[in-house]
Length: 259
Image 1 (spheres, rainbow, N blue to C red):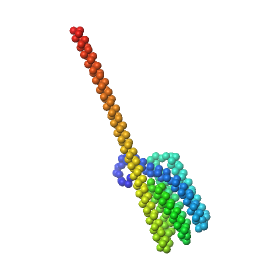
Image 2 (tube, helix red, strand yellow):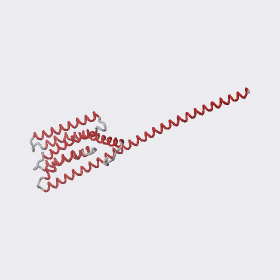
Image 3 (cartoon, one colour):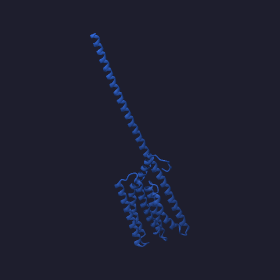
Image 4 (cartoon, rainbow, N blue to C red):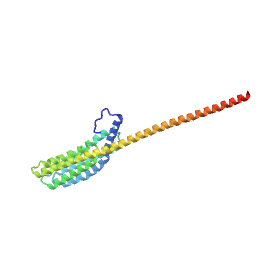
């Protein structure tokens, strides 16, 4: 997939398109679990932050998270209802990444706007929530290139910026540690993507091999039928010749007797 192929054959194009379609399908299959976690964690975060920020801010943020989760769940429903072809999967993949990007932005707002500077406990809880969301996204979004990156970067960069902007050197080390955690998650997600892609490639190669074996078997069966047909025709010809020979010999004997 990552190599450039000059003038790819139709079979290679179909293979790549089918692989992309399977990667998109994995995204949609695993998305519902992430939505459930979002619906539980977002009100918990709002409850913890209730006394630190205006209630209308928090309620608006939770409402936006729920509306986006509803929209993403509707997108999943339409995807499986439509059952798009492999060619159409590219569009559905882009729609999914767009929704994931919006979700990352909302969680980035939580890490940037709802950051309590004088409350280490709140900061620790916020870091714990964002880290858990990133780790969960790594498990559910790694099947499609760019999906995890679209969520994790906007979700964590505002929090890292808030932490690193403090003059205390301890906060700077915390920000570097969190940034290192993000880079590790991106690296693991990339490795997981490669594993999934290799697994799908192997499955497609096995299917292609099986199809070629079936085609060879069908050709061999057709050849055997043709040979059997030729043998049958040869046997019939030999029987007809033997019958003609016997008839000729009988006529010669009859002619000789008459003479």
